[in-house]
Image (cartoon, rainbow, N blue to C red; front, side):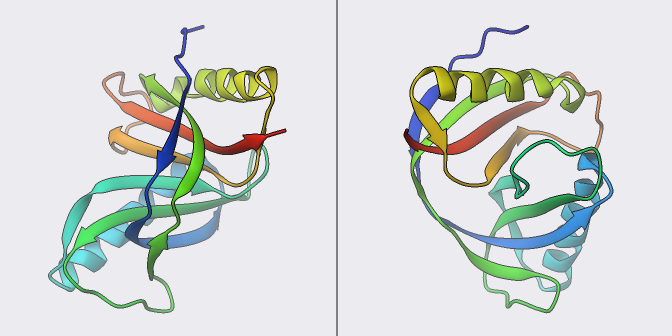
Amino acid sequence: MPNYEVVLKTVEPIKVAAIRETLPNYPCIGRLYDELLEYFKQHGVKEGDYCGAIWHDPGYKQSDVDGEAVISFEGEVSSTDRVLIYELPGVEKMATVVHHGSYNTINQAYAALPAWIETNGYKIIGSNREVYIIGGNEQDNESYVTEVQFPVAKA
């Protein structure tokens, strides 16, 4: 098990384009990113630096996962029935760890972070996020870097 350094930090709000849907499993979120990038291309909008996922279920699920793909962008574009443009709210206190490695081993970060939260007298107060610092569509790419985030408050 990797030794994760937990960092508590403030996360600033950011304007994003998003698609939220109930997915058969976690890897299926990749097609939502493809759809967002195609939407940007059709509307002449440039992808920004922030690419993430919001997992709205309160715990791990094997199937029917409530996931939201979010990407920041440069330029102007409007919401549609499918693509929502909004400001992803900031979070005053976000407990975070950085996972170096494939998505297939990200469960290690998901074991370490909630354990730290509980041990240190915090409670989770909202949906968790993943920020893809280096990522892609391959589940087993060891070069990926993902920040796992949980909004927290003192218990």
